[in-house]
Length: 127
Image (cartoon, rainbow, N blue to C red; front, side, top):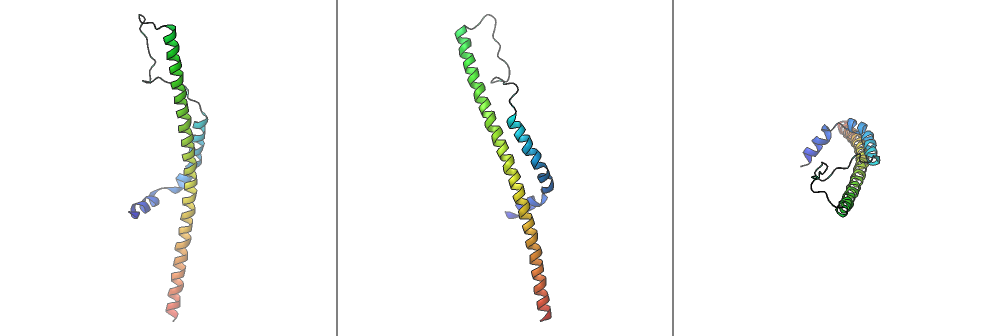
């Protein structure tokens, strides 16, 4: 089970991922700062009312209050999603830097192990 993960880690172009991480973080922050341009209705299209069935003022007021509540809920959901996206981008940046440190440590350990094996081979050969 560990082999596919190791292969995936080797296949991922970490240089590209690290290079693009700041731009992803910046884009997530821009998305968080930006307000939605146009709120849409439930079906994505504006509701049309037939001319013969004109609602009363009270019905219009209730519909307006309901629509405002829905818009506020959607705006809140949008803010939460953008905050989550920004947090994920920051976690991704931290994860990438941690993986880079682990890759460096692995290289040091591999070279250290090779040096120790070479040293043991030399000691064995001399004895």
